[in-house]
Figure 1 (cartoon, rainbow, N blue to C red):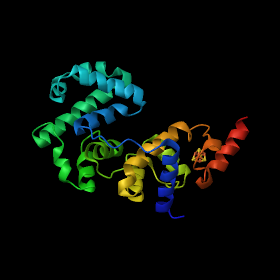
Figure 2 (cartoon, rainbow, N blue to C red):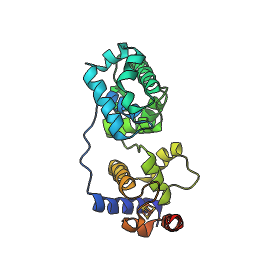
Figure 3 (cartoon, rainbow, N blue to C red):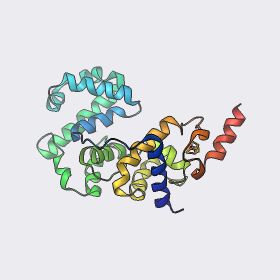
Figure 4 (cartoon, rainbow, N blue to C red):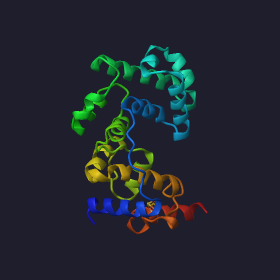
Length: 227
Ligand code: SF4
């Protein structure tokens, strides 16, 4: 089965198992950039708690820019790496304000995906996942953010070859998944990775992708060995 067809089949099975994701509700791009920086190297619970604290504490993101890095770090300690993330958030927002003359990314709206990704990636501290999250969740543009779950499941399913790095996976999957399915694929595969195709001990016996998976024999062999 060709990879594009396989991707569509994977998504159909995942949607059947977990349901269709709720329609996209676009988030303000500056919120999205801050939220994604906070999510680096931590789970959603911790990063969303830190984001909620920032939202409550600052009346606007302009006022966050005027705050000391150390006081921002104190507010986001739930998210871990607080000093690094606080400095990164300030640096990224300052650069956006310098380029745009205000704290806004509305200029991305008219750009195509490639140009918008280049713009975002040129901001120090913005990696491929943050850039793709902003484009997908704030502008509804077809860019695929690849987190640890998507990377793992796509590799196990053979949608990404063994040599592809997580950095490269963003553009490989963006090209592979039909544009109109990127949002559903992103959410569906994360759900599958969290619930069934776990990093350690994937629950292959309960997996809707079992018949299509290249990794299952290895996973089952490992599970037997550890018993
Ligand atoms: S069969 Fe196992 S390894 Fe393959 S996708 Fe399903 S849970 Fe993951």
